[in-house]
Length: 209
Image (cartoon, rainbow, N blue to C red; front, side):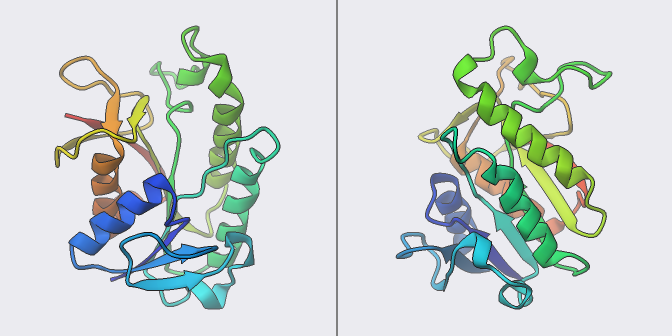
C-alpha cells in the first residue's frame, strides 16, 4: 500500500507519517519545503499545484491541511475541492483530517458542537470554514473520501495510548464522559482507516478510551 500525506510537516501530518512509517507502510511526505517528517520518500510540491499524475501511484492520499488565520480559512474549501478534482473518478482514497465543531450533539443531526454556548467564539470561524468544506465534500460522489473528526479536545502533546473508540456523526464521549484524543492516537485511527478502507464516503470520529 502506498500512502501520501499532504502537509506532512504539520503537527498532525507528522504524527500520521510516523505512525505509517512505524508500521512499515510505504509513505510519501508531500511538503512545500524541506521534509521534517519521518517519511523516507518526499514529493516537494504545493497542494494547489498537485496534479492527477502526481497522485496516481498512491492507494491513499491523506489530507492534513490546516489554515487558522481569518484570511486563509476559505482555503479549507478550495484545497479540498482541488484534491477532489485531482482524484475524481480514480480508485485512490482521500482521507481528510477534519474538525470536531461539525459533529452533531442531537439524534436529529440539527445541532453541532460549534452551535453550543460553551464553544469558544475564537474558534467559531474555523469551525464554520471546516463545516463548509465538509458539506461540499459530502456532495462528491466521484471521490472515495473519508472525513475523520477528532474529539473536542484534540491534544497535540497528549500521550499515545494505542487505543481509541470509533464514532460516527455524533460527538462521542468515553467512559470518563470526556471528548478527548491525542494527535498520536488520532494518527493510529487515521492509518487504521487508510489500511482498512471501511468508511468510504462517510464522516467518522474518534475519541480516546
